[in-house]
Amino acid sequence: MLVNFMDIHRRMQHNSISLTFKGTVTFELIDSIIAIISNRLDQIESSVVTKKKVYGVMLECLQNLCFHVEKNGLEEYNPAYDSQSALFMIDSDDAGYHITTGNFVAKEKTENLKNWLDEINSLSEQEIKELYNKILRNKTFSEKGTAGLGFVDIARKVGRLNYNFNSIDEKYSFFAFQLDISKAQA
Amino acid sequence: MDHLILEPKAKTPLVNFDGKTGVMEMKGMSCSENSLEFYKPVLDWVEKYGKSPHGSTTVNIEFKYFNTSSAKCILDVLEKFANIYNMGNNVVFNWSYERNDEEMLEAGENFSEILGIPFNIKEV
Image 1 (cartoon, each protein chain N blue to C red):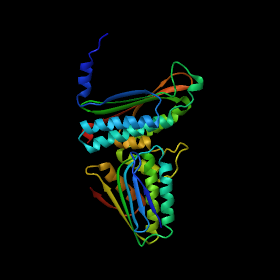
Image 2 (image 1 turned 90 degrees about the vertical axis):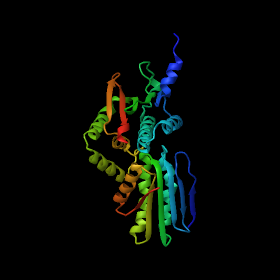
Image 3 (image 1 turned 60 degrees about the vertical axis):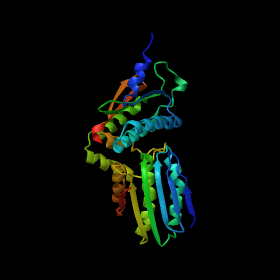
Image 4 (image 1 turned 30 degrees about the horizontal axis):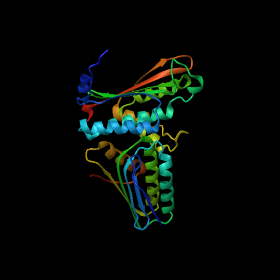
């Protein structure tokens, strides 16, 4: 089948961003993705506030994927999923920017994760700020060196955290996480 | 007291802490995935400086962006300077942010509130 590449090229050039990655997310890869998207944002986004929001949300999401992706996929490879592999997507339209991530989460962790996201979603803007400060003041870091602030910080920037879990088998669920950064927020 | 200089990189800020003049500067990006490792020597330096600080200390901070794991580390560094201030020493905190960058403005206000110490906050 012959695809009209010129048409695709034209569509992708028009004031938009589009990048999809599926695979193992490494810190080196994050640097490359961030560099590509930052350059593109400098070309198409005039608002400093929106630019930094997109940058910040993208970075926290990618670092989350790198820190929290399940590491036990290799010894029990299953063609239905590759548990180390994650999905990252960013695109934009007239309304704003859309960031989606997907990764496999061990079932025993989904309940905590779900409760945490629901709790953040139930809070007002002011309460989110208070929660952020509370965690900030609490000096502990996780074993992975993460601060536990990631989702709260993202919620501070975008408001609602959209997510769902799809059950894969008795051990894993697929966690899809989706965020919208509206241009009007700027 | 010696001089701590860490050159700025893509994911880590400039740190220029001068024990001889009491002028401390932190500036740029802070979004490393391993903030703890980066800030450890910075914290150690300020801890040591606090034992015999300069007659007056000026802390100049200007971040373009910092990630969540850096936020805790930055608060730790500021807290060490706040301890020097709380012991009765002269310490001035200057927090600058890029024009229109509400997030960094808020961050400065926030750190100042958490520490209970006034910051001079200005747009640059």
